[in-house]
Structure formats: C-alpha cells, structure tokens
Image 1 (spheres, rainbow, N blue to C red):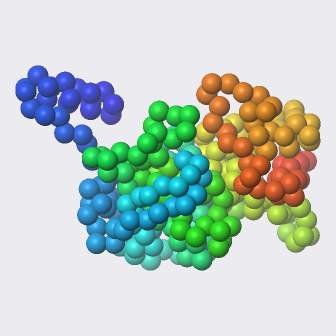
Image 2 (cartoon, one colour):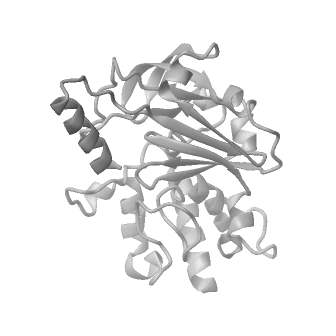
Image 3 (tube, one colour):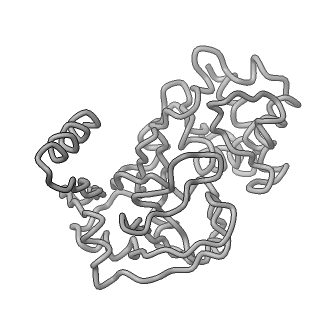
Length: 269
C-alpha cells in the first residue's frame, strides 16, 4: 500500500498534476453489516462538533478536536447483541470496550484529523494521533483508563467480551468474588490487554505475551513487576520502548490485583 501510494505521487509529479492524498477510512462493523467512513465524510457530518479536551492523556495536555459522537456512528449500523466494541489501531493496539462503558456516563467521540490542519506529533513521536482518535468527554465519570483512548484508530467492531472469546483468561467460578485476582482481571482487560496477550488470548501485538512461552511472574520478582508497571523506563529502557508509565493511571492496589491475576493464571497453567 505504501509503495502504491508512493508510485501514485511520482506519476502525478511526472504528469505535472498535483498529487491527491488518499482519504483516511474508518471501518465500523456491527449487526452483520460494515460501513466505511472517510475523514472528509466525518468532518462534514451534521453530527460533527468542536470538542475541547482539558486533559488529553496521549498528548499530555489540553487539545481541541473536530469529532463525531461514537454512539451516532453506531446508530448507522443494525443492532448487535455483542457486549463489547473492539477498537483496533494501525500499530497493533487493540482495546476492548464494554457496551456498558460505551453507553455510560462518559461520552465517547471519534476525533477526525483534518488533512489541511494536521494535529501535532505525539510526545516523543514523529506521528500525530490521527487520522482517527477515540476520545472521551467526562472520562472521570466512568473511570476511563488512559488505554481506552485509542489513537491511530482504524476499525471498530462489535464482538463478544474478552472472557467469552478467550475462556483461558477467565477466573474460575470457585474463586471468591472479592479475590484480588478477580479484580486484577478487570484492570488487566482495561489497561494491559490492548497490548499484551495471555497465552495466546487477546488481539494486541504491541507488547509480549505475558504467559507464553514463560509467565512474566516467573522471570520478574514481584517488586520488579510492580516497578515495571508503575514506570517501565525506570526498570529497562530502549529506543523502541512503547509501554507508558501507569503510576498516575492506576493505584497500588490495582497493580497488586494485576500481579495476583497473573500469578493465578501462571499457577493454573
């Protein structure tokens, strides 16, 4: 695709005609139907509005976007009984958003980057959050995780919940409802599953599988694993590192719950 676009630009230049960039496309699938929306269509939509975001977790500050409500986009598709919406990015990041979250007190929007007025590069990167970016209005009302803001968004698909799709990552019914591992499963799905798989369970490809071929709890001490989750760069660092620090996003008790969940899955193997 990149080669084809480059060839198009070269040929257009040779012909003396101005090159026209291909429109960015967002794909939505639900109820057995698929709709494709270009950036131009969404920017011109009657549902589009200017939305100010006081604390954008990806940019680390205030941002203003032209965006359309996600619920309005979903209403253009047939009803779907699936309880989860999978948000897939172009870089291998795949967030699982429950219908309860989508339809809750926090309001999800799809921000559209205007090719004529591109957004700034993300901190420490050479690319912006575009061409599409799943953002939230009033995220504090529903405890929206920073990992539920999906930049470089490419597709949204109605699917079954993670525990239904991947039974191997579920907590056994015999485990008490108040067990830390059960809480850890919820925290992991919201914050870690977008990048990491668990013994092959999951869709994310940004980070390593945390159970296969060896469980992370086998090669990290508990203190090391806790420090890694809080601030990965303080434990190990390299130029291509992508994992963010979660010190401000999740508390100590939630980190402990994630570790309990990973230990539970490792022991069950």
